[in-house]
Amino acid sequence: MHPVLQIAVSSVIAVGSYNVTNWALNAARSPSKRFYNGKDKEVLIDLAKDNGVLMFSQIRKALRSRPSHLTIEMIGIGNPSIDGCLACYEYLQDEKKQGLKVTTIARSSLMSGSLLLWLSGDERKIRDSAFMYLDEMEEKSPWEECNWQANYRVAFGVMNQFFPVKEFLGRRHPMKRLYDYGLLNTRDEEKALAALFG
Image (cartoon, rainbow, N blue to C red):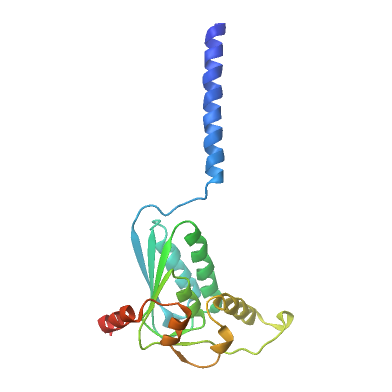
């Protein structure tokens, strides 16, 4: 190759390599943001089915199209497996770091695991006549716990970041108590929601 042409080609390769390297470094430094399509997705969770795997599958399926906003509606009296609810909560927290916004709407009362799923929302709504209930557990040291008790301990630790869990254990509480901890929208908005959906 002619020396002048060789120098020119080498320069192009060098510049190209520099640009590619810079692009790769910038991409590595920048946090990944997957949710840019501006679309909304909705998923309806039947709490009465008590199926954590199905619940997780529904949420993951809804996020395949990479929406900007996900609405999770929950209905039915039930207490889904705490392990499944923990999986859903942590999965949604990871996706929210990528730019996802989540709204959770409870059409029914919330118990233990379902309350944890409801808390995963950036915006939370609940039926005005609903109540919340947390299972009371015998306190044991971590090495004496069975698996489900260990999961409850972890879940209650997460919930304790939102409200004092010990004050709510073992008995029903009206949803109005959640306003005291800033976990709901304004009361007028919730009354309008309750009137609309009965």
